[in-house]
Amino acid sequence: MATFKRVGLRALPFVASYLIVLGLMNAGVINDYVFSIIVTICVNIILASSLNLVTGFTGQFSLGHAGFMAVGAYTCALICINLGPVVGEVPAFLIGMFAGALAAAVIGTLVGLPTLRLRGDYLAIATLGMAEIIRVVMLNLHITNGAAGLSGIPQVVDWNWVFLFTALTLVVLWNYIRSSQGRRAIAVREDEIAAEAIGVNTTAAKVQAFTIGAFFAGIGGGLYASYFFLIKPDQFGFLKSIDILVIVVLGGLGSLSGTVIAAILLAIVSTVLAEFSDVRMIIYSLVLVLIMIFRPGGLMGSREISDTILGRVFKRGKATEGAL
Amino acid sequence: MSLLNVSKLTRNFGGLTAVFEASLHIDKGELIGLIGPNGAGKTTLFNVLTGVYPPSSGTIELEIDGHVTSLGGKSPHRICAAGVGRTFQNIRLFKDLTVLENVAIALQQNVPYNLFAALFHLPPYGASERRIAEESRQLLDRVGLGAKAGDLARNLSYGEQRHLEIARALATKPSLLLLDEPAAGMNPAETAELTGLIAQLREEFGLTILLIEHDMSLVMKICERIYVLDHGIVIASGTPSEVRNNPKVIEAYLGEEVPRA
Image 1 (cartoon, rainbow over the protein chains, first blue to last red):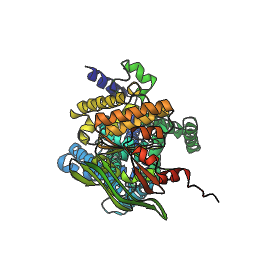
Image 2: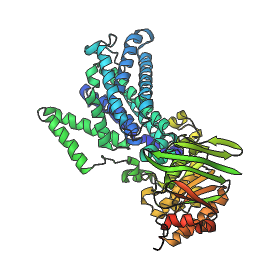
Image 3: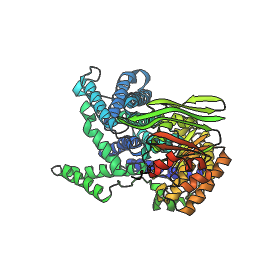
Image 4: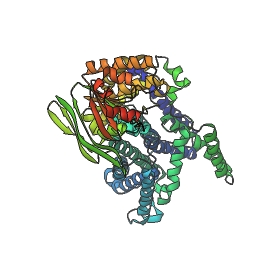
């Protein structure tokens, strides 16, 4: 009974946001433009929360998340375009999503294995290089259509799919962090030497978290490709990686709810500023600087919504119950 | 019955020899002290034994139930899995995690469920998590930290943090426990309490303990044998009274007598 109640409480924000968007769409309040912003937010949530697993929870600095996104996007797009007419658009989309995420995960493992054995910021440089290599490969391959990119990707994605994949990502990452495996990753962040001394294979823990992060970045990329139906290599450059990192740091390293809040907040800020195109980037940067001055740990620090007063009001039960 | 056999262990850092041809022999169930002046190489020896640094030469053998494992050059988590637990001189807790989580992480050497179950919280997950939490609480109760399970490790007092390190090391189910200055920074009353706790834990968990300590009241009281290290060399070993009266030890600690002119 208690478990059902807890699961129900956790599901509440998901169900609510799903129904609200659905209702507003049917009521005509959300037009295509607003919906594209919502999709951008969701894709950013997927990318940033998967990066948060690597950087915020495992403590490994990665600068190439857009590279994994690109792998997911191109794989999904190519499968959708080529397989779509054969097996139908929706099955092709699902196969593409899975294959894209898997491809990103494989590349993540390959990059992670040699660099994550080391302590320090080697991963940052390696991922930076990897993302550039991926971008340049996409730019020069025949199959990816070079700088013009891929267009005419069947637009399968609607609100149901966007919601499903975003919710799935958040739930799975949340579960991972609250598992044996996830706690080992957190131990690595806290103190690598101590983690080793109590039997944590730190290299394996880091590679595992990094691979899972890459997998979900691939999911984000696939979703992006399917909704915006046009992808080009320059969308997955260094600046995209930085954009994702900004969301993670702004929301708080080690806070999934912080990432969600930051992704929404930044989308709102940049939408509002779209009208003032001259000073847009100045104000956007200023907002970032100010938030970092007043909340150096990010909006949520390493806490989750459920740790705050808001969460306690909802919970009502004993806070220490099964405190793990 | 021997548990740990260290033979001619040497560790160099560039031109500096921190430990030189140290040989130790520890029987199962013994409580051994490792003493020596500051900079004698005690912690380096611990770090080599636990795999933080590989040995430059020499062998380390751990014998459990007649099964001999060579530890030299293995990574720390392997050595931990082989049955060697440790605490740190400069306390290395997971400071931003709760006291309970600190112990829980150490309890998962063999993760009880696979990644798939972890990602979707499938059946083995719930039961295993409850068992881990339960075991963690028992260990915390044992070292007197049961009431602090939900606190962040950084908010514990110094003495409590040392106790938590011991609980965390016990969670790895070691056969050999290495304690690096467990009483450092404690007042005499706390040291006496810790001395009693170490002796009790040894009985309860069937531990063999090797401890570095500067507090001679603790060392002389509970250690059955003592190794004395100076400039990386084992200069003496024996029972507390033998070591106390050994001229080499006195010299290492107090310096040699100046002959009167």
